[in-house]
Structure formats: C-alpha cells, structure tokens
Image (tube, rainbow, N blue to C red; front, side, top):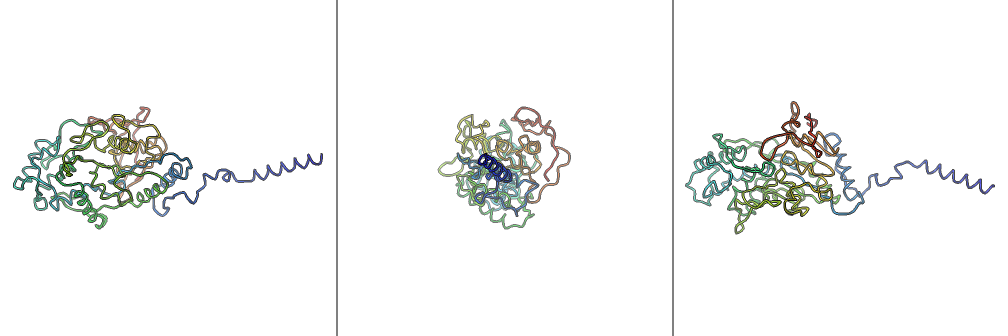
Length: 422
C-alpha cells in the first residue's frame, strides 16, 4: 500500500510540473530562431505590414521546416521596387542624347500606329537624317515632343489617337510595346548601356527633381525603396527564388535589377526579337500567342503568363490560367492594375503599393483571403483618394478595354472600397 501510495504521489507531482510549463515551450517552432531571416525593424512600414510579411516569410521560407521546392516571389519594378519609372528615365536620356535611330517608316515601329501618328512623327522628325542614323532629338523639340507624347498618352501632340486596331487590353498596350520598338537597330547591350547612363543621373538627382523632354516635364529622379530592398534581401536569405517581372524592355530592367541583388536570369521584361544581334520591332509572345507586334507583353494577365511560362515552365494556352497552389508564387508585389493578376495569384502575401489604381486597390482593401498588404508609396506618397474606388461598377478592365465590376474568385462582386492606406 505504501509503495502504491508513493507512486500516486509521484505521478501527481509530475503532472503538476508538466502543467506549470508555459504553453509556448511546447511549440518551439513558433518562437523566433537565430537562423530565421528577419526584416529590418529600423525600416518603417505602414501599420502592421512588416509583421504580416515576416509571418509569411517564416511560414514559407527556410524556417518553416517544410522542405520541398523553393517558394517564388515576384515583384513589379516601376513604383514597386523603385520610385518613378525607369523606362521614362531611359527614353528621356536617349532623346537628350540623340540615341533614337530614324526608321524607314514610322509605321514600321508598330502595327497599331495610326496614320495620324505616322504623319505627325514624319513631319516633326523630318526625313533629312538617313534611315538608321540618329535623330537629332536633343535639338529638335518637336520630334522629342511627338515621341514622348505618344509614349505618355498614346496620342499625338495634336490630340489624335496614336494607336488603333484590335488588341487584348488585359494582355498588352501598344504604347508599352513601342519603347523597345523605338530602339530597333541597337543591340540589347547598347540599350542596357543607355539605361545605366540614365540610372546614374537619376540616382544622383535630389528627390523631387524634375526634368524636361521637349516641352514635357517629368520626374528627374529615381530611388530604390529601402523597404523593398530589405524585403528582397530577407526573402532571398529565407530561401525564396526572387524575380522581377516588368513591362519595361528587358535590357532596361537588367540595368537596374542588380541594385537589389538580382541577375539577368531573374529579370523578366519585354523581350524583343533580334536580327543579327540587334533589336527589331518584333516582340516574343507568351502562352501560345505568336511572336509579332507585341500581343502578349508582361502586362496585366501577361505577367501571369510570363511567370507561368518562364518560372514554372508551363507552356501553351495553359500559361494564361491561374495554376494550382504548388505552381503559384508565394509573394507578389505591384503598384498598378498592370500588376493585379499576378499579385492576386500569390498564395502567401499580396503586396499592393498604393497609387490609387482601382482594380489593384479594390482587391487589396477587400482582402478576401486576409493576406493583402496595402502600403502607401514609401517616398512622396499620394494623398488619400477622395470618395471610394468604383469596385462594384467600373474597377476592372475588360479584354475589349471597357470597364466592369471587380469580382472575387467565386464570382461575387467586390463592393466599392475606401482608401485605407495613405
């Protein structure tokens, strides 16, 4: 009886000691560990966004202990990783330094260029410069103006449409395709060189600097966002495979991506068709869309296609579809409706840098899966949008260019949303 009683007392003591151990000690995986890469706590994010991103990194990165294929993160570039637009910066530099070669006919630069644009460009830029030689855009204000107006507004200086015809408005936009097409005759290395020259000037210019091209005034500086540099660094340290997916010409994007530690293999942009090593107006297609005038750019749904085709090796028409969980990015980051499809595809975190773009911000503020990370621009953020985003009626872009409601995966309509990140 004495021995039995002693055993009972011993068991009771053991139970009491076990009960006194804090619950967190039973789940060490949830506690921070020295080998878990951490976002820099001295770099400011909006609200609790750093904590949201850190949680996703811990869940999906090397600290998860899950093993398997490396998770993928994909970032847009302009106004997502940097402040301002590297394509505008490169074009501005090229126009100031006479780097656009005269085409035989301006119609050759784009299958969608209108007769009005062809006429305006021919008149402004003249025909005295031999075909294939540099246009004197540094001195010819009218020529620089027509080129930049078409890039910026898809119209001539007289207000006439610069592009016309049929294209899928969720897969391409002619004005984006027109930039690499303008640089036809140069090698990809030369275009990267122009972009690097522009990069040096833009990084050296003080924040807030403006520049003039022709009579156009535009931003004259670019800055890498410290938050995004740190996020990319942390993701890489945590075992993520990180890519840039940009609607810039790929040689332009490559001049900048090394600044966040990414190489050419991890930089995806508009890919031109080469002829004897030189750029042509032809652009490589995606997802079964043939090479040609640029019918499938890394733009809106085209960014999903490029991610699926180039990263996950999904070929043909299937590349346009949202894939299963194992063949989707873990993190997507963008700032505009041009990014909404691939950012929405992310399974771990959808980072939306707020530039008041309706379709992206409708999804961000609806936060259907609880994984959206909406953040104001890190430099010179925009003021709060007055009123609400027209999510329920006109927030989404349709393939024909019209607008309609933004819908969730189950088909339900997202109600209008207020701006909550400014």
